[in-house]
Length: 113
Image 1 (cartoon, helix red, strand yellow):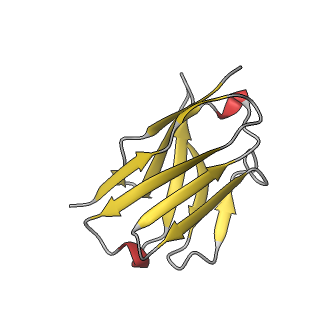
Image 2: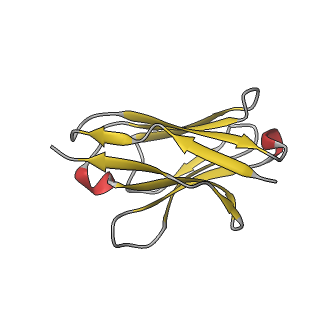
């Protein structure tokens, strides 16, 4: 059974940083591309970033490009998302996603002064 558990969210001031983690189990993590999505309050789910299985190709939504960095540690079965220069509009529930059928419970990021 696929399990994805996010952590690292919290309350941060504008301009601050957070690092999100996603612990994966139940599948061969090193063979799977992974994604981060987010859902702002009252809005739909939006794609944030994708990383390939080896971690050498990454893709970002224009809204986060240059501020967020996706990475992975295949030895630890863990996906990361480094969030820098946070803005109030980054406030959302952030989800680790393997595919349409598998995503975590989410971790809340709130950017507020």
